[in-house]
Amino acid sequence: MSSQMSSQMNTPLRKLLLATLISTTLAACGQQAGGDHAPIAIEIDRHTSCALDGMLLADFPGPKGQIHYADRPTPDYFCDLTELFHVYLNPEVVVPVRALFVQDMGKAVWDDPQGHWVDAKTAWFVHGSSRRGSMGPAIASFADEAAARKFATDFGGTALPFDGITPDMVVLDGGALHDKRM
Image 1: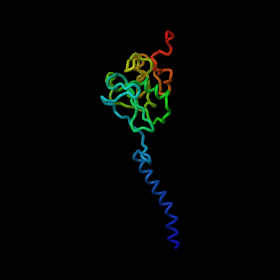
Image 2 (image 1 turned 90 degrees about the vertical axis):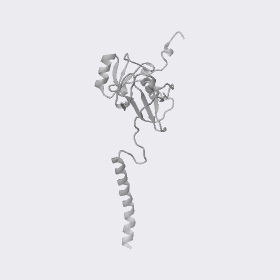
Image 3 (image 1 turned 45 degrees about the vertical axis):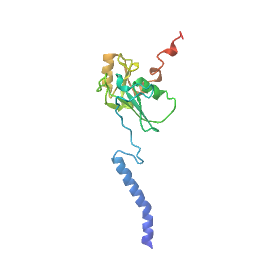
Image 4 (image 1 turned 180 degrees about the horizontal axis):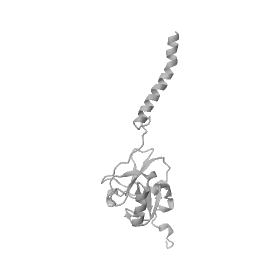
């Protein structure tokens, strides 16, 4: 009887050890229990359209962006980082964001950017440069501060970290709200 009792007492311990082993194995594979792994950037193609205005991303120069939301299987894409930041900083509906990706313009070609996606929250940005994107003046994105500062020296603007971009920098009204003639 004591061996049966010993087996029953070890069952919770065995379950705990098995759960620990499974969690450790999943962590080593870069996944979390439940399949909730970190999103990765998804490359755009000729048919990828902007979530905000429906424009085809591949038709325009400058960096693109994508927001991965917790409740959606696919990201929202943006043909311009002004639009991405406008949506992120001024959400109409608050939905948890899992990840934001932008293109590293230190490596991507401005007129036809492909690949080179980086985590927007660790990226550097240049606001106020002379470079144009799909919506006019573009916010440029870079994987590192040195590349952003070089771009600002070459094309004007100010190099800023992610938290340096503010809602007043990403207004989409084209100045109409401040036009006193209307």
